[in-house]
Amino acid sequence: MWKIIYNILTFVALPFFLLFALSKRKIRKNILERLVPPGTAGKHRMVWVHAASIGEALIAENLVNYMRENTGFQHFLITTNTHYAGELLEKRLGDHALVRSLPLDFIYSIRRLLRNFRPEALLIIETEIWPNLIWLTKKEGAPVMIVNGRISDATIKRYRGLSFFLRQVLADIDYVLAQSEEHRQRYISIGMSLQKVINTGNIKYYRKPAAAFDASQKERIITYGSVREKELDTVFYTIKRLKERFPDYSAYVAPRELHLTGTIEKELSSFFPCARYSSLKKAPHPISNTGAVVVDTVGDLIDIYKRSMVAFVGGSLAPYGGQNILEPLFFGTPVLFGPFMENFRDIADQVTESGAGIVVKDGDELVRHIAMILEDAALMKEMGEAGRRIIGKQQEVMRRTVDVIVEKIKLAHGS
View 1 (cartoon, rainbow, N blue to C red):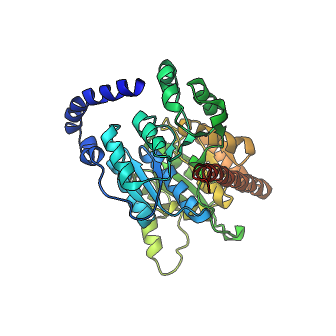
View 2: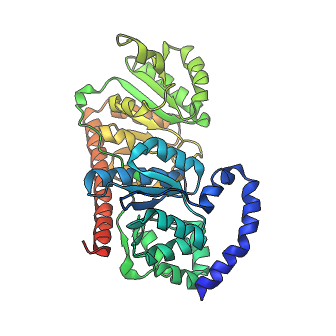
View 3: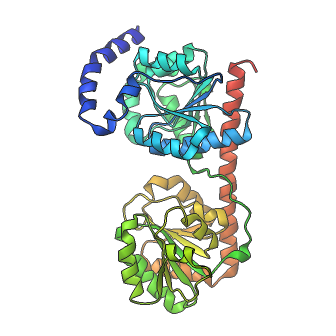
């Protein structure tokens, strides 16, 4: 009965949605594909991964790459809600996955995709509860799992108010792999069966293990990565103070927005020799006596973290929500960051509790703690080892998650 009511409502809403979509360029770009899914999968059945937008797409990318390298699954279909997320995945995954837009939640559109691609499982990243998507995929015999499941603070109240209806939809979900115990309890509170929800951990922070590195390759570099505009004055202050104390160290500043490189170069070059990273990369021989380097390239920050003695990760000293603080830890580089880490709170707590990183509230604290680390080799080593242990835990979270996925798919297909 609920399925009938739901589908009547969707068809009634369709004309209004189309009018709305035509007025929004972001939605208009892939609206036809979402109404009439094109193409076929060929002779191979595929694991279908749905990633709503950019954040989920990055998780999907890591999941697909891990499964291709560590399981027998090689053929993947990834759907997204936005044209931009789809473009990102096509660029980064190449021929390793087929990327399409998620059909609108109409019976005809979902059935057409299922008929075209015959998926052997549907993995929904984080949370997208579309009734027809779930009901019809399950009806076709493909297990449906929510991976890295989460329900936000804003969404949980609305879901609880709809729990009577949601119970009907959730009954067709085979398993929820929640990213934390808190989110596991939230799924249970909206009607998911206790036996179908497991806390496997958060794969958002997984990255492919970095190649082994030699600590002796470290250089006298202090890196300020992903710095945002409102943090520049604090970073300038810190660099000037530390340069007085550690004149043989170079400061590498990588702004989050490249348009800031001119401002950074102008400020720092008035105090000591300053170069752009793009110029250093082209130089036939290493350039010495560079007091500061402005990173004006994309994709090089990870290598700079590898060479650094210590790193500050920006987006955190002003209310930007933070940036990923795990990248320096891959290479045993102690990390510092500010208190505004709302978007990365759980990993920030892990890093501080383990001793791999330090929270600072202003420039004076940043100066003091960087100096403390540089002057204490034992502390630097201890922080680096703690960081590597955290990275090891993220590998285990991905392995545990994929083990459950593979087990459920094989169980559903009797293999």
